[in-house]
Image 1 (cartoon, rainbow, N blue to C red):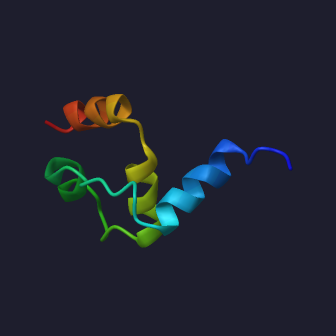
Image 2: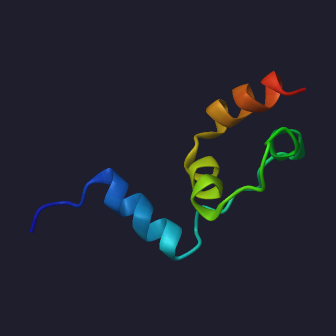
Amino acid sequence: MPEPFLHEQIDTLSQWGNIKKEIPDNVAQNLRYELRRYQAEVFERMPDRQMQKLQAQYE
């Protein structure tokens, strides 16, 4: 059986709630509308380094 793709492995982790990450307040406060579930999932999947860069933009 072939090894699952990375996105499939991440999907599995996400379904089990193993990649939960808090979205920084300064990022959430700069959104025009309330964060949707799929948008929150994108932030959760972001590597920490990318999240730090994004957070620094809104400080």
